[in-house]
Length: 218
Image 1 (cartoon, rainbow, N blue to C red):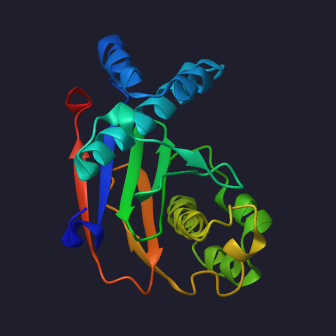
Image 2: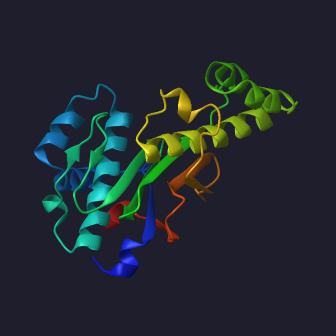
Image 3: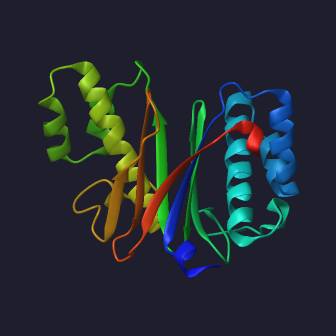
């Protein structure tokens, strides 16, 4: 891996809402047999497609970085089930109609994307997950839409940090106190109706490049 590539974080983004059966089949071919088995166990079509396209996007991006076939990328799994490789740090996220992959080379990364929805009860969710100071800040926003946008952006930030640190969002340290210590956070340009954040080691000296992928490019 070239030195400059190792110090660069690539964020791949791909819209999936209009996926055709042929595009789904092409993505499925890139996955390992274990990944295809896991996809088959999803009960609903939408999360199944999100999983398949996220893994396919990662394999295509990793293959370009490593100079090997997508199917040759070998995954192993950490204590919390986080997928990883020996050669690359990476993280995946998917939400309704959008998948994302952060490829970090030697740099630990975490990424989260969330789709907006009028059904999200921002204040209620914040009261169960965020610190009292966060809840107070949210209450200062009188407009329910502004509250929802604030909540979604903060949620993606905390989720990205937790994933970067390998904690998992269930770990209270990811949500309370000085939760971003040692991590650099960046907001992502993920389009209208979506929110996204990237987290990576604050000690890393790197550049971040966002790439939009077409389904047909897989």
